[in-house]
Amino acid sequence: MKYMTKLIFFDTDCLSSFLWVDSMNLLIQCFPQGFILPRPVYEEFKKIPHFHQKVDGYIQKGFLEIKDIESGTNEYRNYVDLVSGRDARVPRIGKGEAAAIVLAHRYKGILASNNLSDISYYIRIFELESLTSASILETMYRKNIIDLQSAESFWSGMLQKRRKLPCSTFQDYLDKLEKYPY
Image (cartoon, rainbow, N blue to C red; front, top):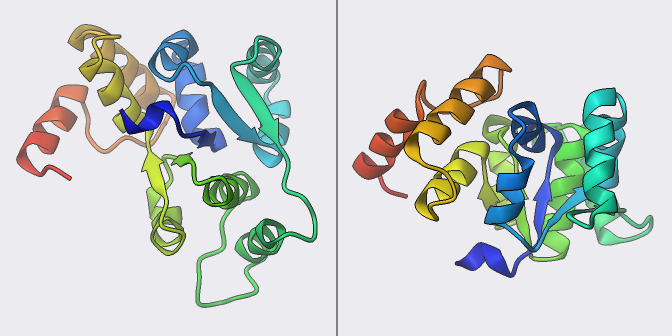
């Protein structure tokens, strides 16, 4: 599978989806190479004490790695452009999303974000592969890491925590994929 060798750069919302439903162990099982947290994403998790503790634990175990954007680089200039709103022709986005985008582009990795309405423009111009909480759950299901009942339970739990998902149930999502494959 293509995701097994590429770095995955998470924004706050997408990783939060899995923290909310206490399924990080399954995320790690699905993508054992680990994940990258851009520094601004890590800083956002510091504001949520119960998540910050969990994130620090996964960093200590080597499943999450914090990555900085070095000042003076193209990534830094792109990051500043994305968060500043200087260019009125493109949407302004948050620091975590912007950092995940520029780092995924720099390292030819995969962006993990649920905020497609905010970032789809950048996914196109930076030619990024991307994942969402929904597509990650689908991958877990297809790899037999979780069964349909577990997927539905995680899906429901994410919706209860106001995570952005494209359908009301996981089965509806699978049906939609069958009807309209990528």
